[in-house]
Length: 183
Image 1 (cartoon, rainbow, N blue to C red):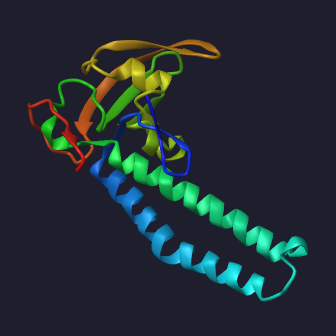
Image 2: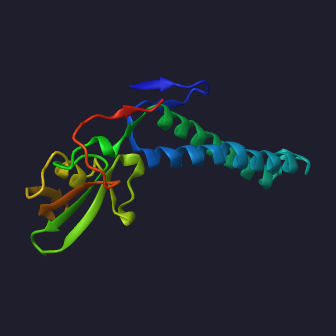
Image 3: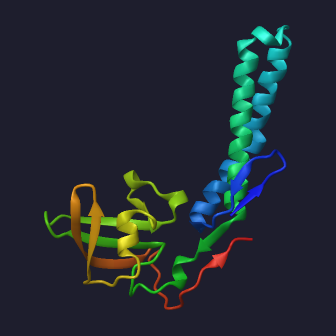
């Protein structure tokens, strides 16, 4: 489902699943772009115009390209925030893997243990052990309980993981299973 913005741009209105921390980071980035970077690039454009002929003005072209990037990122962030669904980790049970959970798994082939935080795709950062619910491992783990084994299809074949532990990202335990729509 797509919506057309006032600039003729298509914005994907896909629901974005975020933790409260993830929403805060997006809002901070949006604020920074609107209050700091937008002003800086406008100042650069104004300065470049003072140099005269705009057709051969590299500074002007560079500043205009940066302005287009910033405005595009602002539109994208606004759309993500507007379409976000906030996961309140404290409202989920630690009985099964869910978005927002921290999961400890053991690779049954090499007997190594790993711990991952399951997040929405917008917050995924594998280097920080934050994996997307849409990744092969994230998808395979969702809905499973401690002690269960899951098969994950990878480019190198199927990998078997045993779930050794599940906890909410904030350490809280609860039983209700709901998510809140961001306002």
